[in-house]
Length: 402
Image 1: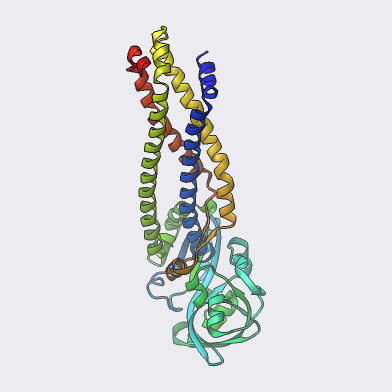
Image 2: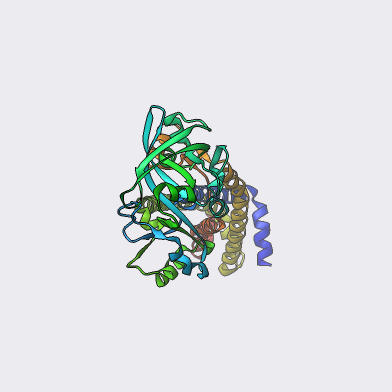
């Protein structure tokens, strides 16, 4: 009977119910959208820099990260013991070295990245970054260049680049390779300095047969912390260094931590505004029903029954508001995930100076929507405690005169 009365009360005063439910819908839509944009920006940074290029975990010969020379290379078979590790999805060996690239009258220092094209295409998104020409194969003699480098050196597909560098143990490394394709690595800094060739060509160029400078480890289910701990128990730490993305990119981790702290502070302000906004609505509606509550108490209805009915009304409107808010916000979040916000002007320049792609997609992580919906629901229940307290302290004669 009490639930039935609460349900009827909601429809008895449609204006009051619409105001309350609309406030909850707005709160859910705003908080979920804001949090999804924030986490989407983090995910995009990690996908572009970590997922597509750097990897969550890398293994190097001891000292390579501090002094990136070809002399700090290791034999590929040294890591064969990791193939049976249950926490590892794949191992991609790479060669990373530096060279002076020349084309006609233009010269520029570049990073030569030697990869296994078939493995990288299978496990990473590097093949999807191709925007012109053809991709590498394990047998061809060509290379890929970043779109930024292509513009700087005015290179077309089919042109050749001449490289000069230092090879293994002080030898001279030189070679000429045709450009097969142009790639967009999503990070301006990488696009301006990266040249990609297959692993065999890079080994021949630097004179390190059957060797590599790094191994990118793909953890199963992206559980890189678990994979890192397992690898540390298998490899000799005096010979190899095992580094996760946070160690390789401490600036990115700090940027995310600072931005997350700033986002949390903004959310606290948002929740405060929502709390006072909802409280203002509840205060207005409670005053409107003051006479109603006074009459009910005067004719003999117990305050506990009135309190429960008011509580049921609040619960019903809160649940309806949260569900409608989620229904409204899911299409918005989905749209901006596939069609992200493109930054322009000075904001684009600032973002690209830090080496990030100037777009902000939303995150489709369902826990963001669930968490924000529960927070808004809790705030709604909290502010509606005022109505319950008012009913408990109501004086019928005074309420009916108001």
